[in-house]
Length: 138
Image (cartoon, rainbow, N blue to C red; front, top):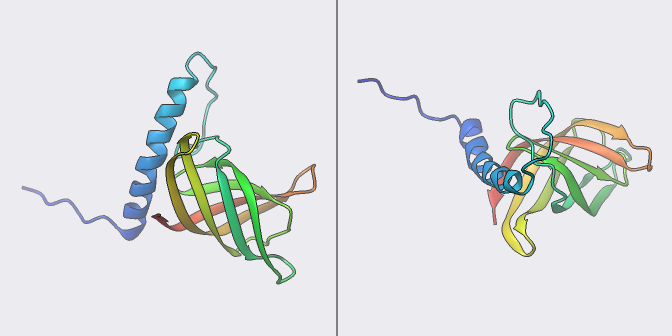
């Protein structure tokens, strides 16, 4: 009889948020039946829904920022969103995200992450790719 190795903290963190994201993806897929699916290279599925969020941290000028935004996409390991201020890669940010599956229903999560990519968008905002390091449901 073999014993399974205990989950690492990272695996445990990804599995809880991953279960919730997977559930939302399944609900979203039900609504998107018949739409053409494109090839995805990422190892974790992404949910492309405009979930409302509040993000705060320190920008590239060492000034604190705190803004409301919507997510472009989310997975159990990362988020992509756009903000009006430049944030350097390596910066820590915190977020409150409303993972809505219908208007006014769903879960709220507090996330902490590290900016892995910051890109200037054509509208003047900055796209941030954030690796999720910690999360908890509120």
